[in-house]
Image (cartoon, rainbow, N blue to C red):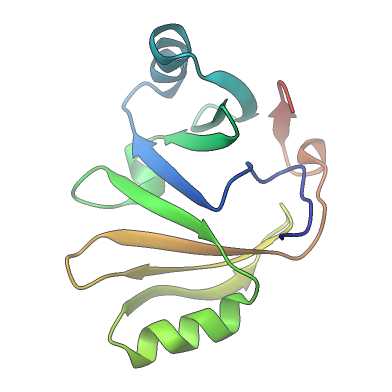
Length: 137
């Protein structure tokens, strides 16, 4: 359904969970719950796989929500999606922007204050080209 991008985890809905120690949290989630490391992004983010799904472990400053989590959702058209969300009352935190990792993303808060990032794949980006380290596809 979505174009391939080596820099983006699989799945349509991807939880992003904050941990003070990203490396320790990623290791614990792998050991305790059977996740496998997919991609490391410096020392502030790790993508993990589990049975066809994914999560992202991130430092608190990378998500920026008071409740310690956000949700990433893949969409086909970030601009149209953002326009619809704004018309319906979502608070747009960051407007659609294209990033070197091959995704066009915007971020919004819902009516309950939950943070959402919507991501459109625009290119198949090799993580090594922007500083990511592929661990296991």
